[in-house]
Length: 100
Image (cartoon, rainbow, N blue to C red; front, side, top):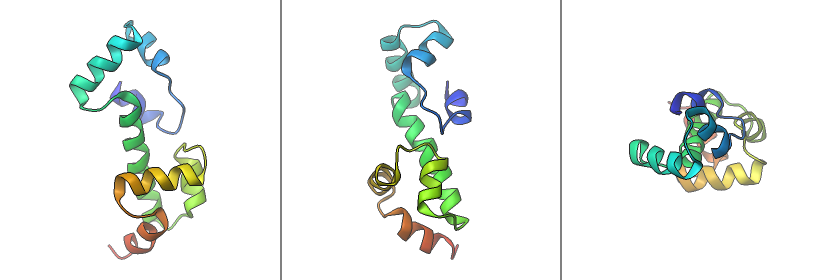
């Protein structure tokens, strides 16, 4: 499941899709995934998206491009998630990441 989510990080992967791949109920898959990985599937996918977003921002791509490429609904949603998980806005990260 982790590999599938990593390969399809920019897509909206439903819990139903994941559960059908491994022949488990959605509830059981979510519980099992959280137990093994430490996060529910959707939260894990957000983490993967943000990892890719940090890479793209460090390469000086625009915030709107990165939001679109990493599968976020829009730039506002991306900015809120990025700031919540990383601690700074994507624009601030983009400016500072170029120096590393």
